[in-house]
Image 1 (cartoon, rainbow, N blue to C red):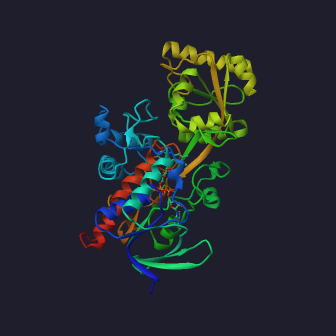
Image 2: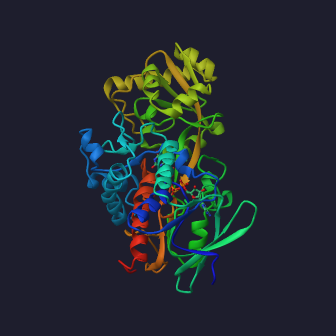
Image 3: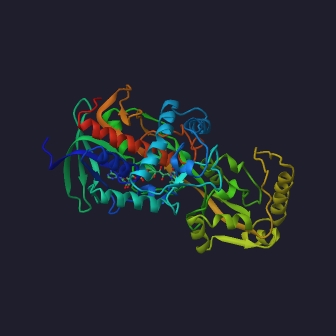
Length: 460
Ligand SMILES: Cc1cc2nc3c(=O)[nH]c(=O)nc-3n(C[C@H](O)[C@H](O)[C@H](O)COP(=O)(O)OP(=O)(O)OC[C@H]3O[C@@H](n4cnc5c(N)ncnc54)[C@H](O)[C@@H]3O)c2cc1C
């Protein structure tokens, strides 16, 4: 086939995965073009908290934090109840420090570690973020870095088709412009970094029926094209029903309210003023639990100490500015302004107070060691949401996409939400950070591998 133009490496998507892949390919001497459907690169990365988990980094050591790839892998495997791929988990945990140190040392990202609270299921402080700890800042610094390196990022270019030989070797792509004109681009290697299918309601209804009516909080451009292309090419795909949910999105404001509030002592009650779960299991599975409560709405209840602590989070400050945060001097007053039954709320808080006094465990399995709530009290009305999908194309430790028979395609790589994640088949397997972990590590590996492939330094 004759293409309008040719380039050694094409990267589809300019989120964290695509931009990191482009930077890695560029470092290894691979000429690359990134094709991005939006006018400005953002993706789910820009909507995220921008926190990337990694173990054994220089940043951790500088903050005196002890961690290891083995500990990190054990956390990820435990959270997914061993229903993920242990070899991939181990490989990406080993890679995590390499990628973060490379982003800091070579590309000047200033990623530091949050050490004020532990994310659910993490046995060490290992969430790395840019100074403002926002996804907007993360995508901003990656985009600027790509610009500095003179990596062409063609925006308003939605890839619609892959052209492949009968053996699955990819020869190029077709992409469409907003005016519906089309162009073709040939390549020697390609990286799919176009995330999953959270923005595609038909696919969500089919693959995650429980979340078909849930609020989708990720990027609308995540339409599941990598999965559709993979299906046509005969790629292996796993855990397609896996996803990250979140049980704390301010309603109706649509602003994420950090789960740190729950981890540090807050509780969730339903409209009957009753708790309904162990909030410490994790925010992902909590989405479904929240949606199952009457009206799909619950209240985060906490106090002044936690309100002050949450000021560190950009999203929380936004929620406060938007009027989502309510305050009251007594539990009775709080019940009134939240339209909750006062007797039940008083009883719920008395129960948690009794548990925190004894360090006891409640009927849901939560321990209340340090969680005594005190006046003044705070509340935010929240709902559950779908953040992003975790299932996708099977890849190996070199980020090569695998065929359904387990053998690799010759020149097809994938990472981030386009690839199978590390969270197993459902919502309960998502450990905080699994999203950006696969975006950054697999992006790094995929870009470097693609560059080496086109220089004939490696073969498939
Ligand atoms: C609110 C929220 C908070 C989150 N917080 C965290 C967190 O703190 N830590 C964490 O690890 N994870 C978090 N996640 C998950 C994380 O955002 C994603 O896992 C990660 O951003 C995925 O990166 P990506 O590069 O694969 O996808 P994206 O960032 O979505 O990038 C994909 C890009 O591909 C483009 N694209 C799609 N299709 C095409 C096409 N056909 N042609 C061309 N371009 C295309 C899209 O426009 C997009 O720019 C959060 C998610 C949400 C929604």
